[in-house]
Each structure stands twice: as C-alpha cells, then as structure tokens.
Length: 249
Image (cartoon, rainbow, N blue to C red; front, side):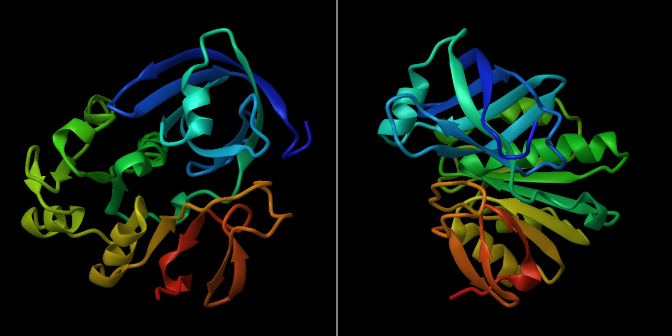
C-alpha cells in the first residue's frame, strides 16, 4: 500500500466518553504507522474536506480515535454506527521521537490533546521507559480517558481550572506542586498551554500542534508555519515539532 493512499476502515464502535467527546474504534490496516503522534485524515460522508484526527491507540489491526464533536463534520462523524466504513488516509505526519525521552520523560496533555499522549505513554512503557503523565482540563465534567491512563500504572496527575478534580489550575501548577523534575517533555493540547510549557520548562521537549488542513500530506500548503529553520507544514513536517525550533509570537 502506498503511503497516503486512502484506505477503507470498518467502525467497530463509536461511543461517547464525555459531554462532547467520542471514541471511535476501527478495524483496518495499521502497518504504516511508525510512531505515536501521527494522525489520520478522514473523508466524512457528505463533506468535501477531510477531518484530521490524532491517533489514540494502535492494537493489532484496530485503531482508536478520540474526537470532540464541535462542528457539522464531526457531528456527522458522531452519527456513524458499528459496521459503517470510512475512507481514511492513514499514518500521516511526523510523530513523537521516543529516542529523545531521556531518563525522566514528562508527558502533558490538555483536553482533546490527551489521546496522542496516551499512545506515547503506552509505547514508552513497552520500550521499558517509565513516563510521568499530567493532564489538564477545564473542569471534572470535561475530563476524558482518566481510567485508561490510570490503568497504565504510572505516575499520573490531573489539573482542572476550576479545582473540581485534582490540582486546581494548570498542568504547570502540578509540576511545581509535585516537585516533578523531568529531563525531557512531550506535550499536546491548546496553544496557550504549549506556549506556557515552553516558557516555564527549561528542558528540551517536543510539542504536537493542531491546524486546519485540507490535503493532510503537504501539497496544499494551507497549514504552514514559520519556524527557526524556515517554513514548515504542520501536516507533513509535523504535527510534532522540537521546542527549540518553534517561534512564539
């Protein structure tokens, strides 16, 4: 199968796991995936543009996606049932580089940025590395995937802005309050969270960025950003970038 060729996947399950978040499990080819943090681009029936979604987990020939239902496209995606088939571009983008993890990696996820962090945590554990995970949400009612992370049996913390669960505040407050001392960090979440992490953590790291995109594999150039090493495409050169290469405005 040629990379970036569309492939048919069959939905096994498509269930709510939060107030506006669903988890979709699909069956289909997974051999092209090379690292956690890659994404897929889904052709939603009835819509011209595909929807990019980060991969939460790969297990044999099954793939798990977690997505917020926030627009007409994802609303249509949420209506699909077990047995329905989807045209998907798999294994897109550059994922997290686990070889950089160091001895004490810290994994940080915010909101719907948590799913690729789960995939990374699983892969690090399988490689014999013990990561620490910190997740951030607006409130307890917006939390997702808590049970899945707890089942990994690793150091795990949660922050909520309103203090309804875990530490009150941001993921950076957990780092300070718990005295965490990582030597490398990986993060995926809202842009303000990523910017704050880069400003406050004086260690190297990798961050997964989100962007509106059309093709998903570097042709349309609509998801370009300026980095210290020139213009890069989030879909092709990312979505994961080294902290040191990013320019914050």
